[in-house]
Amino acid sequence: EAQVTQNPRYLITVTGKKLTVTCSQNMNHEYMSWYRQDPGLGLRQIYYSMNVEVTDKGDVPEGYKVSRKEKRNFPLILESPSPNQTSLYFCASTPSQGRSPLHFGNGTRLTVT
Amino acid sequence: GQNIDQPTEMTATEGAIVQINCTYQTSGFNGLFWYQQHAGEAPTFLSYNVLDGLEEKGRFSSFLSRSKGYSYLLLKELQMKDSASYLCAVNTGGFKTIFGAGTRLFVKA
Image (cartoon, rainbow over all chains, first blue to last red; front, top):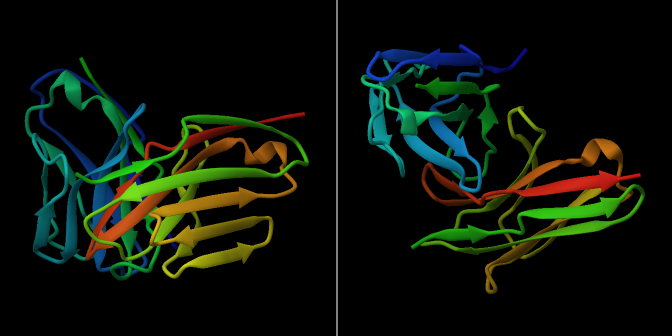
């Protein structure tokens, strides 16, 4: 089944404790992206990747890191999480730019205390 | 700046028709998408418009006017399962897609 898989679904952590949210897609898509979703603000892009070893900042990259060592995987790293990073995170992929819709993972609900 | 505006909430009756509007001001335009998102779930693709006019897909239709920066999603024969958030999103060029805050639709019996 074609899908984008995120883990974990739920995560509660404390300020400053490094964490990684994994994302994997099995559709051979070139483009992958991370979004965070907050009430009243909609989905905001954190980072995106056009292909292996090619990444760029989205609208809200501060406090996040990403890597794209393999085409299928695009982990999101929070080196020192803070409470304002409490949010619902979505990973998404698409085969090409522009006209193809995004395929989203099931989301990761992160709480930083 | 860039922004996408859509109503926060709408309520409609089962079996009726509802129109969800979206206006956008973006630096570039390479297509407009509508997604459906049920509470706690991932957004799923509904429709795509890049040329002016109406695209119909079963009970769902989407309209685009590029000169007006305006789109709408039309849902016919509403069902209870259509209660969800509807997200308007614009691809502004390349790999950049920006989203509106979403319209939460409540369908009542």
